[in-house]
Amino acid sequence: MLVGLPCRDNYRAGDNKYIVSYDAYFKYLDYKELKLTRRVSKEAKKLSKFAIIVSVFALIASVLVPIWISQTISQTFLLDESQFNQLESTSNSVGE
Image 1 (cartoon, rainbow, N blue to C red):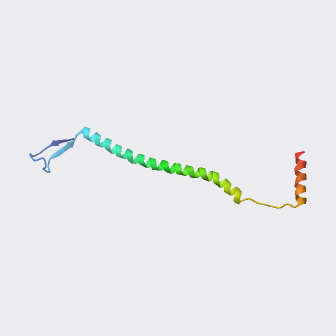
Image 2 (cartoon, helix red, strand yellow):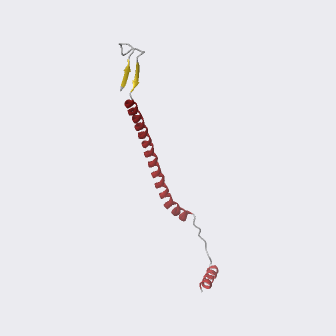
Image 3 (cartoon, rainbow, N blue to C red):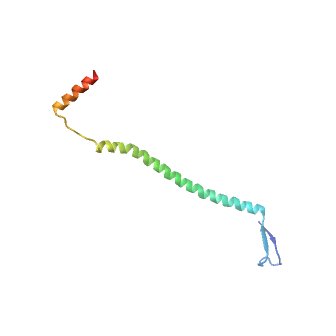
């Protein structure tokens, strides 16, 4: 709501002065705050979705990486009978 202080009879004259009432000013501030809050909440929603996607990816990676490592980085070696018998006798002597 504007409070007019007209200088002439014509309200369209360029030298008329208007003052915004306190109520209108505070409503305008509330409107600006509401716009800012909506913008910030949209950004927070986007960031929360991104965080959920990252956490799901981390969960999947924490399950799949050890499985992949166990299948790709495994060593196989062959023991002849004498080496096997030596290991067996060593493990039996430690166990007793």
